Amino acid sequence: MHRGFVGVAMVCASVGTANAQRCRVAAETNEAKLLAFYTAPIAFSMATAPQVTQAGFVRFGAELEYVPKPDPALEQTGACFTQKSEETSLSPVFGRPRITIGAPLGFTIELAYLPPVTIARATPNLFSFAIAHASHFSIGPRGGTTLMLRGHGTYGTVKGAITCPEASLQQTSPTAPCHGTEPSDDTFRPNMFGGEIAVGVTPTIRAFSLYVGAGANSIDPHFRVGFTDLAGFVDTTRVELQEPMVRATVFGGITAFVRQAFDIGAQVYSVPSDATMFRLMGGFRFR
Image 1 (tube, one colour):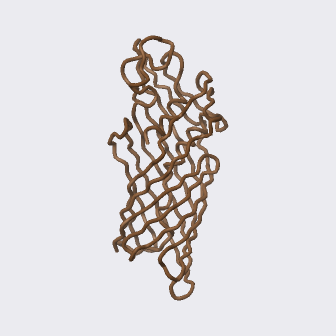
Image 2 (cartoon, one colour):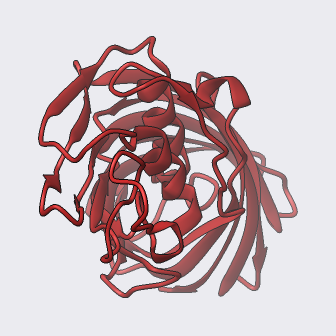
Image 3 (cartoon, rainbow, N blue to C red):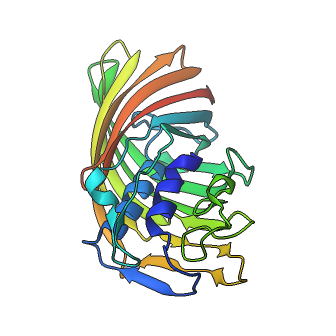
């Protein structure tokens, strides 16, 4: 996960002396597109096919997804700093635990939290939530179609030595990046909320469900540099969007059920403007 956020940081790092400024970037700039790209894998999508749950239903689960690499053309930056090309290195996976709770009248509440535990020199502190409502339409004695409306959000931070990790520190050239002895303490905020609609189809055997859906996310990611060089200058440059961007989403997947106590599934989640992810889901269910 750490290397995924390295991409944002390295693209936004200044090649000059340390400074404190706010750089607000337009949606068409590479900086904005990279912020959006690294926000996409964190979107809090559905954990399973749509289903109507009863009050008191609880599911403990987790997800794991493949994170693609950005288009090399996006790595040509220059809106905020000196134009240069970057080689971003991404973590191939991202994951989180999650819980789903059944509420009255067909509503469900979903929660996920990544605590501030440092992993690979990065410290996430991310909270995700969703509320959904499902309606089932029977087809025959056992199968049917389920329609779900769902709203979700993700807020928090990922901190760590992103711009200038220990391996990049140097003491020879004051005008070159990372001229210091202490790693940077940078912050990435992938703030977003969104809504989606999904339709699930359950065959008469009821061993699995197929589903497809679409929606939109309003994203407002931020990045802040935190580096002190040998001269004592503190770079707290902030890279922000001029205004939040709206990204369309499409997704589809399959959920298989094992004796109604365990489920496992796969999902393709795509933000066509930014990235497409493949996710694996699994969970234990209690009624």
